[in-house]
Amino acid sequence: MNWLLSGDLPRSRILAFLLIGILACLVLAPFVFPGTRSLNVAAKVAVFILLVASYDLLLGYTGIVSFAHTMFFGIGGYGIGIAAARLGPTWSSLALGIFLSLLASLALAFAIGLLSLRVRAIFFAMITLAVASFFQILASQLSELTGGEDGLNIRLPALLQRSRLATYYAVVLVSFVLFLLLLRIVNSPFGRVLLSIRENEFRAEALGYRTVVYRTLANCLGALMATAAGALYALWLRYTGPDATLSFSIMIDLLLMVVIGGMGTMYGAAVGATLFVVAQNYLQDLMKLASDSASGVPLLPNLLHPDRWLLWLGVLFIVCVYYFPSGIVGRLRR
Amino acid sequence: MDELLALSGVNTHIGQYHILQGVDFSVKKNSLTMLLGRNGAGKTTCLRTIMGLWRASAGKIHFQGKEITRTATPDLARLGIAYVPENMGIFAGLTVKENMVLAARGGALDERRLEWIFGLFPAMKKFWGSAAGNLSGGQKQMLAVSRAIAQPRELLLVDEPTKGLAPAIIAAMIEAFRELKRDATLLVVEQNFHFARSLGDAVAVMDSGRIVHAGAMAELAADEALQQRLLGLSLAAHQ
Picture 1: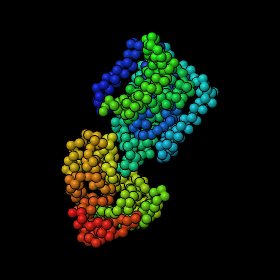
Picture 2: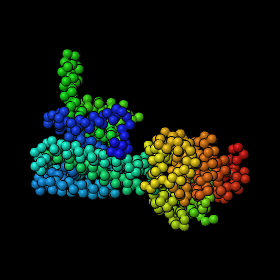
Picture 3: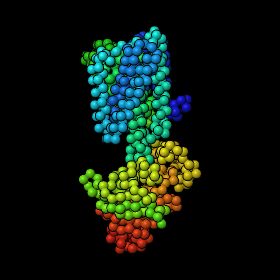
Picture 4: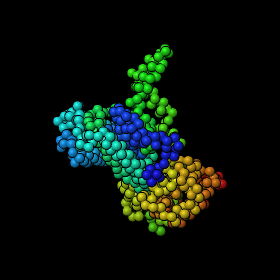
């Protein structure tokens, strides 16, 4: 177990239970929570755990604030979508789509990193914002290739097309393996250098580390993982489009998930993503129950009306950030 | 003795401020040179300029006969210059061990050297697996020095190693630096004259961004009038 988790054990009993619970729910979801909706939520949780973990590699471990992460997520989705649409629903076209999207993300992340990681953090954030917006416009304008605002419906190879279950387990398995890989990366000597750069760039340089190189590498790794997550999400949805992968609201969600889970901990990504996605999908139902049961009380049913779910989601996050400034995992590990 | 480090006419601007205004001095191999001066004289800026953290706007810096004025900080570290910043410059989020391993730059720590460091600073062995942020001020300073000497270095630049430390810890630091002197060249910025006098072979005194005196430490230690003139203090008052 120690080897599997790269020596980074949960170090908190509650956290260990939470993590085992999340993994068990993901593995058993098709049997324990049957139904399309719950399976959709479970698959989204699996993909977002990987996506949030890859963003935490940048934000939490290296101190890079990037707004281009959903762009890489989108590149993964469009890679699969365009390859399947152009070359047909075969394994080789999927593989080619994934390979080319990984290559494109790598080149883009390398270029952004090398050109702009030398400048101050705020300028880097603005450059990534500009590039991401540009990419979003490109995706909606090149409708011949990308399907424009409508996006692309994806036909998968026969096995995946026939069996939702096979696709689900493929998504969960790949997410899990890549998450463990990220855990290995952040606990390697390379990960320690990233942490030292986050803490004090000058000191890391004075020890002989070329920080631009390390930050660019982290940027590339984060982008590759986000691209893989995007490909998995497109495989699951059998669809890719600007709203599903590129929208700025996903970027905001990502930031929230990292902060709520706990920056600089991979397990925080798992907890944050699960909590957020589940709340996003089930808070409305929970509120309907609460509203119905409070029907005799004045004012309360109105306050708890399912239409106000966004308000309560907001309150939940403010409470989370206020009481767990170092995130849920940071608090549990203290 | 050979010159290991030499600065000639070094000027450094930080924003609109002209901090170093033509600094000239040299550090001889296998010696400990103390850089003294009042607050704001430019001592820390001088170390940071040597380390490439500020760029010299004029003048030249030579290390082992090679010009390093424009050399990037990571490359200076690779040439064998180690820097211990003031205010316990450690990585608080990492453990003592991780701080030390970082200094080895991907290589393994030499066991014998590590034992030697543990001999100098026994607290490092005791808190090997602890988070560096939880150490006391003195222990953090010991870690900062230990990290700089984790591998053999040609030159150690140390900025105010005794700042904010209790007298007992300063005494331990003096012993450690005496041991360090045996196989390294050091340039140490210091405010504590007792510490400086105990260890320094040579001394350079700065004022208003220039070197106003350079010579043997013993000479300055013996000349109270010179101390009074250069530093505004007398050694007698410090004892």
